[in-house]
Length: 237
Image (tube, rainbow, N blue to C red):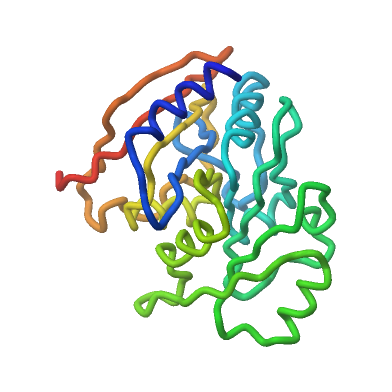
C-alpha cells in the first residue's frame, strides 16, 4: 500500500489542475481488450492481487466515478474492502437519474453517493432519489450528443473537495474521458484470458483511426496479471 501511494503521489505531483481533480482511469481487461461479456454482464477478470491493488487505489483517491450502466449491470458498492483505508466518495454519471432506489450504493455505510444528472430532470424524480439516499448534482449536457459535460462535471466535483478522482468504468465512460482528454494516468490490469466480450474503447480515442500514444510507461507483475501504469500523450500523432 505504501509503495502504491508513493507511485501515485509521484505522478500526481507533476500535474496541478486549478479547477478539476487529477483523474486516474483504472480498469481490468482481458488480452483481447474485453472488460465484460457482450451482454454487459459483470465478469471477474483479474486475480486476487490485482483486486487488492484496485481497492488500495480506491483508498488513495477522494472520489470514485462510474456510469449508470455499471450501476445497472453490477450494482457496485464502490467501497474499500480488501485493504484498510478510507472509502472514496461514490459518483455516478446518471443523466436521467436511473439509479434504482434499491441500489446498494444508496444503502452503503460510506456516505451518500453523488449522482450527476441533467439539469432538466423532473423535480419529483430528484426528490425521490434524494430521499432514497443520494445527492443530485445538476450538470449541463453537451450540445452535440446530449451527454453530460465532463468538464463541468469535474469542476463540480473539484468544488466539493475532490482532488483525486478514480474512473472505473464502464466502457462508454472511459471512452468519453479519453476523447475529452481528461485523463492524467492510466492503470490497466491485463489478465491472461480471451473473452471476446465488450471492448473497453467504444470509439476511436482521437476521433480518427490514429492511435493514442502513451508515455512514462511502467509495468508490474501481480500473480498472473500484468499491470500497466502510463500517462497519455495528448500531442497530435
